[in-house]
Length: 529
Image (cartoon, helix red, strand yellow):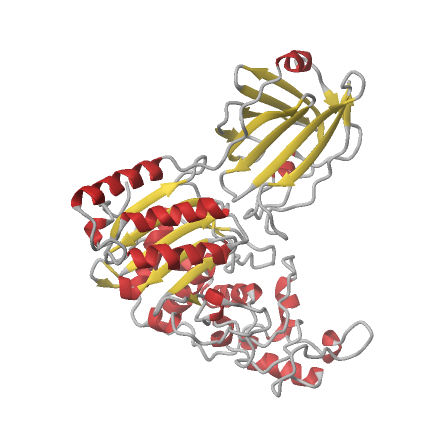
């Protein structure tokens, strides 16, 4: 049962038509939303999941995690455990590099790509800059590194400290997830606790959020990935965002005083920065959160559209899970349709009957949101021919777990590769049987224009799958992990005079230039045994 009482939008001064227009815009733009909540005055006026996703699924939230990390640092600062002006090298003196560690392979000194009076001219100056980095600089993404380290291996801490600090800290904005992870490493060195352990009694229990998942990095301390590693239900996303809206107060109690005004203050300018930010990303950066275009607004923000949007002047929060790189289009829809709908600015002349009709239309729309499944298309003759056929390969092949993949995952893919597979179709259900070195798995997919949702022993997670015959000898299937934000589209092409050869194509369900869980797949050809 949700913490937030549910009433109509109009009861809280919101026009249902604005929410309908928001949903229509999302569909028109082809944006993939998974979940959505809108809460005003502490009342939930709209809530939905796009089938096959559910409201209580643990969804990857990527950099939304950073706002939790900022909150943990806020508790530590206000309790006197840490100080914002502490230097990070004081916690890692052994990681301070020598000059040779910062030289380029040809022996030259790294040069600034963006001319500035604050740019170092030598590696000695860069090491001096490193020694000036404080917790404040990491919180507001101003540590001075022109490029962040992308290394997430066992030596990620060393790699961070060896990344040249070209600019004087506090003078150059650059988004830096590894810097956020360093904050978690410092907190763990100081307290012996991970971010989630540290927040358990301070935040999660007061807000009744339960245990929160965040994966660990592979260093010797097993530091949590505090910059991107959480998975959350939308209910817990909403509670945390509501907590930010109320500046660290919960049910009349002061839980974290004075931090959120500091966290939601613009500390760094992002307009015209090195990343070319525009619109909502050009409004400035606070302490692990972004400022918004609506006056006074700010947000927890994760890749591909994981948003906790805070609008203090409207006493409003909007929570979104999505799977798209067109995230500005989502924020455009919020700014254009949801915000103007507050206080009936769209509907001053609506009658009570019109309002009730719009509410009924909105309720029906929210109950029937779904991602498009593959259109129903059977192939009776070839389906019978496929029954009992086993296709095998003797080539190197990725595992089923890797094949399914999914953005937002952190666990390493297992090494056992697929050896054999077969297909069986009964009624409107495709049964896909896969044999790996020591395991056999069955995946099901619905052939009736909808998703089948079940549990996979291969991924140890729930999944959803839909399938159809794309052409006479080509079977198409889409499989999504429910604990990820994407999955894989498969094309099984049966070729040869007797369809004795099986060629397989795979692709992500989400257009992206990469993300956690998006691993390269080895997909060889198969043939009949």
